[in-house]
Image (cartoon, rainbow, N blue to C red; front, side):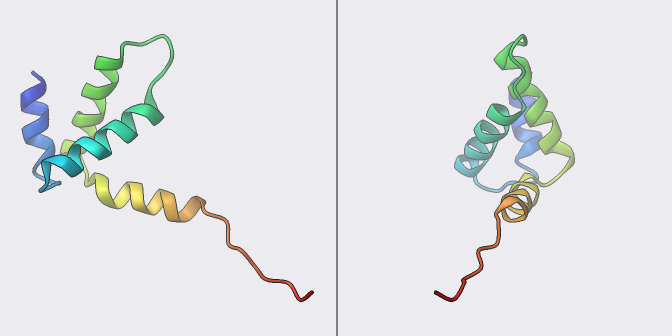
Length: 73
């Protein structure tokens, strides 16, 4: 059941609001067009049970940002 997945994911995220935000972002990124959205959300929550989602998302966000360099005019 999904409630079991949520309680399992709360072991890595202490705030329910933050869990909801992270799960929705991850569901949007991992969703495949020909699959059910509910299955994708369940898969995301199952992944959050085994690893800490906050570190992975912040690391990906910082790794993908390009570094800006200033040039002399």
